[in-house]
Image (cartoon, rainbow, N blue to C red):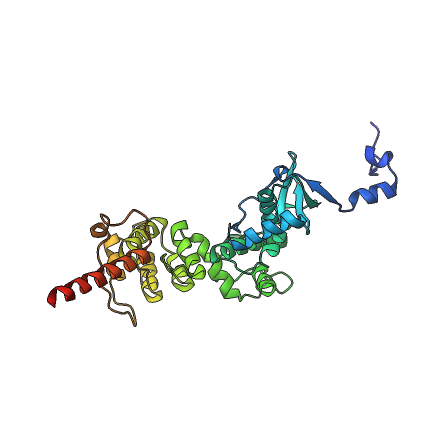
Amino acid sequence: MAKSSGLNFNLPSVDDLFSTEEERAEARLEKIVNLSPAEISDFPNHPFKVRMDEAMQEMTESVKQYGVLVPTLVRPKPEGGYEMVAGHRRKKAADLAGLAEIPCIVRQLTDDEATIIMVDSNLQREQILPSEKAFAYKMKLDAMKRQQGERTDLTSATPLQKLAGKTSRQILAEQSGESHEQIRKYIRLTHLIPEILELVDNSVLKDQEMLQIALRPAVELSYLRKEEQADLFAIMDEMDCTPSHAQAIKMRQMSEAKTGGERLAKDALVSIMKEEKPNQKEQFKIPKEKLSRYFAPGTPAQKIEDTIIKALELYRKRQRSLER
């Protein structure tokens, strides 16, 4: 039996056999190509919302007039077509403007490389919601950890494995301009149910007609079980208020004291919510069921309040006219 020589020969591919080095180098260069938006799918679990706001309307008008001036970045999919990495808003504006094609840079990227580029390109926006930062930071941090061989299941303030003197979270903090602790807080928000996470976004949008909750109490609430969060959201909606930071800490402590999967009782949540908050002004509340016959479902709280005040003013004028 003949022995193997032990030599390994790297056989050239068919493409290498029938192309010159110049042709192969040119093929590796990135080019700008025009692609139909229908050929490009969104990035999986894209954390940044494409909002139909005034900025989008302005972008759409610009695209109608000048086209897409800055090419988007896409990567080819194994099954065919392309996946958007950077340029979701430009693609949406092109759709609204009725463009048949948009300029794209096609780049071969791994999942982790694409994730990091997608997050970095979107963090340049003027307004980023807490929910967007939460999932974006988590996606990027997990991708960085996979690249550095770190564990990806650590989202608490525990020591992390270090590589070259710095952890992935420390590098992320330097790149984003946020502190290590602030990034931890944002990532904790990914443990909130969508309904409560939306209240955190409302605090940034300054929507006075919607319930709002600040970042610090929201982080504490993220430690509650999903069922407890659902109960709490129903209570907040009914009472038309959200817990203070101190109240949220108390809820977390009571929840963590439960063992064997035992659930924090709704009565306990209600009791905490009824505790007077620091500097809380005395409020007069009317149960929603008593107002439901006068207002359509979904009427904003501020509109209900304004209508009641106007009605009371008319009532007072009428009473004064009768007293004359």
